[in-house]
Image 1 (cartoon, rainbow, N blue to C red):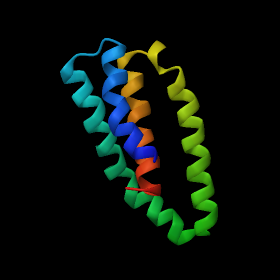
Image 2 (tube, rainbow, N blue to C red; image 1 turned 45 degrees about the vertical axis):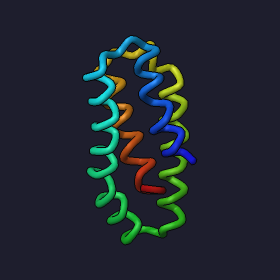
Image 3 (cartoon, one colour; image 1 turned 180 degrees about the vertical axis):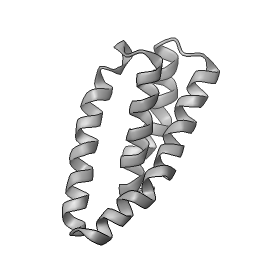
Length: 96
C-alpha cells in the first residue's frame, strides 16, 4: 500500500510544488537508490538484534518521516531529496 501510493502520487506532488521533470525524475530515482542503499545495513541490524524490535524501529522511523514529508513543500529542494532518500531506505526495507 505504501509504495503503490508513493509511485502514483509522488510525481503529482512534484508537479504541484513546481518541480521540473528532471527534478521529479531525481526525486523518484533517489528514493529507489535510498532503498537500495539501506537494505543491507537494516538487514544486518535485524541479524544482530531482535527482528521484531528492528521492524518496530523501522516503522517508527517511517512514521516520523511521513510527518516530516507532510510539510516538505516548504523545504528546500536538497532537503526534500534527503528526506526521500531516507524514506525510500526505510520503506523499502519493509516492503520492496
